[in-house]
Each structure stands twice: as C-alpha cells, then as structure tokens.
Image 1 (tube, rainbow, N blue to C red):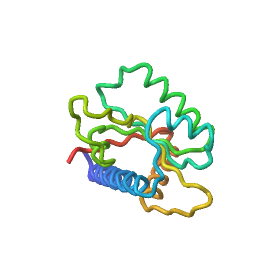
Image 2 (image 1 turned 90 degrees about the vertical axis):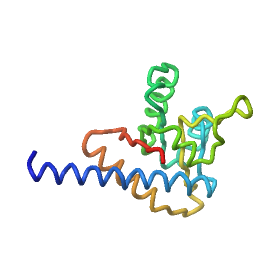
Image 3 (image 1 turned 60 degrees about the horizontal axis):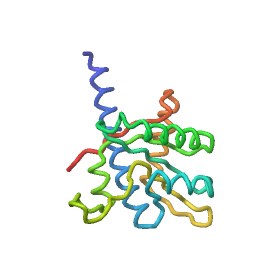
Length: 160
C-alpha cells in the first residue's frame, strides 16, 4: 500500500467518524426539538401529507434483519418516494445504539412494546428556521455520496 493510499484510507475513516457523530448529534437534537418521526408507518403517513417538511430519512436495519422481505419492500418504497421528493436518505446499522440515542427502554419481557426504529424522518417545517450542525454535515455527506454514484450512503452506529 502506498503512502497516498494510506492517507486516503485515513481520510475516509475520519470522514465516516465525523458523519456518524453528526448523525448521532442530529437525532438527539431532532428528538429534543420535536422534529423526529419514528416508525415505518408513521413516516409513510407524514411523507404522504407533508413531504416538503422532511429533510432527511434514515433507514435502520441490522444484519440479522436483512432477510426480512416485508421490511425491504417498505425500504424500497420509502427510498423511491424520497428520491422523487429530493429527500436525503441514509442507511444505518446499529439498532441498539440507535435505541440508546433515542432513550428507548432496554428490552424487558413484555413490559412495553418498543417503537419501530427502522425508519426515522427528520423534519424542518418551513415556518421555523431550525438549524443543526449535524444536519448540515449529513446533508453534505449525502450530496458527496451522490456525486460518487452512491445514492443511499451507509453509516454504522457503534455501540458504546
């Protein structure tokens, strides 16, 4: 491996860490400001009613759920809708970390049903000028990925 290749790999890893941190920051801020819609069906309803308010769609899935055909169909439809409406999309793995970020209770036997975290929408109503550094960073990453013909970039949230 040449020095140039090593530097490129280091830059890519550093960029991924920055974007991952931005996604985590964005999700926490969006939830705090009531700008987060959680769940496949809830997200589909919102996109049908007010797609212009959606600025980012996160599709979350772990490796063991990759074979869930129904979920993959939902993802395909959501991705298509997002592309048609110029909504940035990011695929995310690390459902446990996602649950931690959103303050979901740890899995307990039948106590409460966990929310569906497979689809998350970040909204920004046009009447409000909510700004988030995380949103700017993620949007930039999505635009850069599209420039590299990666239409749905992938981020892995690491457990802490």
